[in-house]
Image (cartoon, rainbow, N blue to C red; front, side):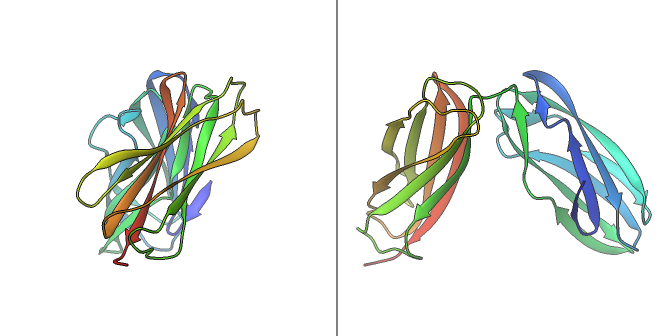
Length: 214
């Protein structure tokens, strides 16, 4: 089980079939404080591909070393990440807690979009090319994938800035692909990478870059 103080936690299973499924969250109070009035939620980063039903769960009290399990019904279409959030009290003092991201595999995908990075200096100037690099890890046999890069400008324009048809990626093989675009406005630009297998989206990552005046 993973630990982020004051909670030790685990979600099972990490691999589910498409459809309505149940995920079980088990967590333990590893502090010396009593946790109470806990509102425990399972949150999806992509509710289209993995939707969590219901408002969450309530736990009146969890004493030191106390362990409990909660069950969440989800509708699963594609793999994505979830995280746990808790609002409550520690010895009558209010606290908020969130877990790191936890990846849930839905069926066995052909590949996973592992990361997206903007390879640039901090606060690049308008007009300077920004290189975006996406990393993919192969999971099962495939005949090649389609990788799209999009940029969302501060004014709201959402433009495709690159499309790459990848080679066949072997299981456990890690490859990276990149493209470049030149921002025309200052402010926050959101860069998106989408990974498709035969037209089905199997991955999405987002990076944010703050562009300054030249």
